[in-house]
Length: 143
Length: 111
Image 1 (cartoon, each protein chain N blue to C red):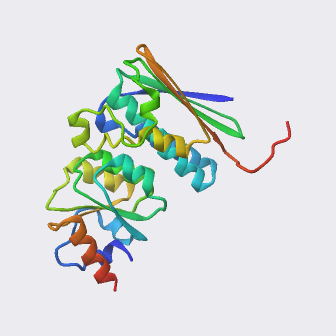
Image 2 (cartoon, rainbow over the protein chains, first blue to last red):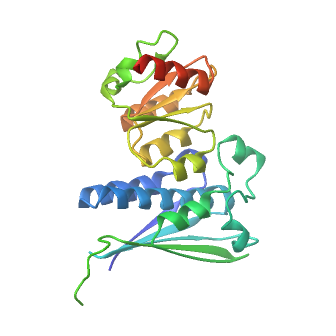
């Protein structure tokens, strides 16, 4: 699997930079538009979470011809309850984040819907969000 | 309908480059919550009506292949929003009316 790593800036103005980069890359590969849309939605939500909730982090993108794995890793402070974070409408976003249009409590629900697989782990030391996308759904690959 | 058709509506003003006038608009959507937009806009070439004066609205519009953002209720987008939208080929319009009143006028205009 090829691997790319990006640093995530915690400045709001740059939020979406990494998801846009991933989207452009998939466009260049000629991936199905609906898959690109799902990847764009899920990666933007995960990126925004790192920007507004964390002390900073990185994004690893790994891929081969079948699968795309996008992992967001941050340095804390962790999600108080992953179970709650998965519920629509639950959010710990600050008043300022809300004024910027965030804090709808739709981040993880959107990621869950958009990704083929979503694995979230969190502790006060950091959160990892792994999203896996099949690049050619419905196609059986001979191993 | 295209962005240039919206420019015919007297109270709507296009602030982005002329290159965005040919953008096609297939549908309208209104929300001021970005994740809500992310989770609920299921097609491309949608125009977003919002009061959210933030560069992140352009990021969302780009990721969802939207054709335009219409800032309503007299909200005037900052220069960096317009510059970013031009770079991404997204039309920026402003309306003094509410999202609903603006949408109603657009639908009427489309006839």
